[in-house]
Image (tube, rainbow, N blue to C red; front, top):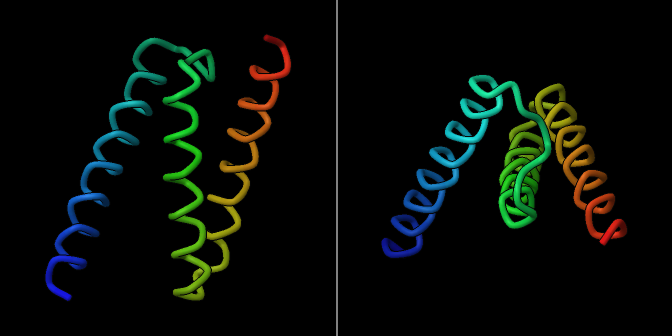
Length: 84
């Protein structure tokens, strides 16, 4: 049980650092979704996890916001994959 909790905390920390780094890069370089596909997939998973967690905590506004961001990233990934 302790290993599971520790693994979750490590994964959450890594995902948080990834989200902060990418968002900082978006703001600093004035870039948008023109990123590698693997990075967009990881970001989509991060926002999906945040959305699900907020719905479980009954924070519906934040859950819908993160669900919308997940949808935007999903559309972006779909657009890149179908253009190839």
